[in-house]
Length: 317
Image (cartoon, rainbow, N blue to C red; front, side):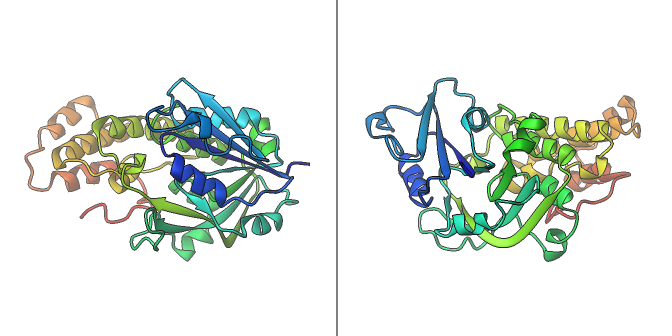
């Protein structure tokens, strides 16, 4: 019986993928799936691709260039394990990760949530400014709210039968592909177990998607969050909506005016959807961008009538 399927999307970082694979113990009940997202042959030697012809490792090459979400969906199609885990190719596991997973392999939960350690990719030194910052109060509180605040899929085990039963899959977008996945989990999960055991090391690396600041990333992320929030509202779970600007503010360094433009757009949509602003009022407000503190003014509009999420940090600085 295969207990675990570990799915790893990859693009153009074969040395780091090799490090990730080396961190996973090989066992007969473990299936490792690597899905390459059309890597550049000038960077990757496909004849010596990490994982080829290795026990327990399956490698799939795709040409669609649809990003990590598409690669993860391909992995899900081939996964046969009782539990599904996801890893990023530039991250790695602790050597005893399977022993910790074994504690929960007979659980009836839909999701098992482990804790994560954060390090700098080049040196593996502890990352001095880890993200996300998770307080004990939040960790021990509403786990659906925790998942909504931190929709990353690594450092978690998902019941394969739960995912298949509810047709849970990833958005095939270049950024934030796991947010829709987690929104679907929030809708359907009836039992989530947590443990303070650490199995996974998430690394901070220059050149990774979460360090690439560009307008395309900003607006793709905005569209994803908006879609997820509208869906959560439609199924009667608005308490798990994300702040439309939270993840962008935390991940992407964008220009001041681009941020103001984005923030006003988020405020406009939020208030219009709530029926708290007419389009004429929005037009007038949008021309107050010359205010001394336009970010704070837009943030005030964005939060109007809504509870301030506990996950928001430093957003007024």
